[in-house]
Image (tube, rainbow, N blue to C red):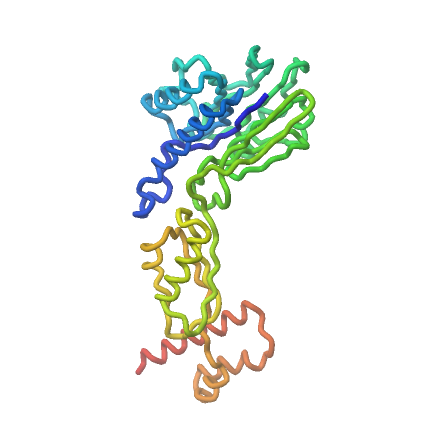
Length: 354
């Protein structure tokens, strides 16, 4: 059986929405999901598994109708969905009793339930969240009772507040595949027949690295998994080493070139290191306006000539401060930082007195 395993799509989320370049980020998440359905329409699989958090919060009725329309365009693919902690089935949820397209199986029960899909000779097990937090290990005691069929568990969770998962116990449960959701980082474990698909698109800046879905082929005797990158944008780290002669224009030009090489549409965490002129400051605001920058960490240190500073300030507090470190010889990183930033602070204080 050929399948696509996705989850943590978070339709309705609008990450980085306060930034001008990301004002349409919510639409991009919808578009990526639509593109996945189009891909399945062009190259049908037997099953599409959505392992929870299809929506970022309680979905509106019109939003459920939108996704159901998309599912109706892939009638030859069985779509299996459960609700996760973000789109839990609470009082008044439009998930309850919704009339899905014929090819859609929505696992509505809050207890583990088994669903037979005779056309595929498959049994699917799973449950839906009715609360945002569930601390019980609800997946630990499932017994597969029809070993002749392909048995799949759709499970959302994996931390202490969201259905803790004992992977060793799951590996011995008899499932031919465990489709996991909730953890946004993709992780495949073919040996134990389970995988986290990760989020289809990164939802916050902690979702570093590639995002997409898992394509799989499963029989009673084999399992093959492949992670397929599919996100429009991903979060990436960029490290930039400055020199004492660097300027803000140089930083902007070189950083722009680096981002083009890494994919200009991506979102970047920038970390500066190296030695800069003591009077130079990096213009962070300009970089955040010009590029898709979500965070800047400045680890640069002023390029002081400590020996010269000491000779010029032997008789004041600055000279005494520097002497203390010069006499130590080789400094640890934390001592170096203390020396650099302490010197800068004392120089600033001395300037203020002038």
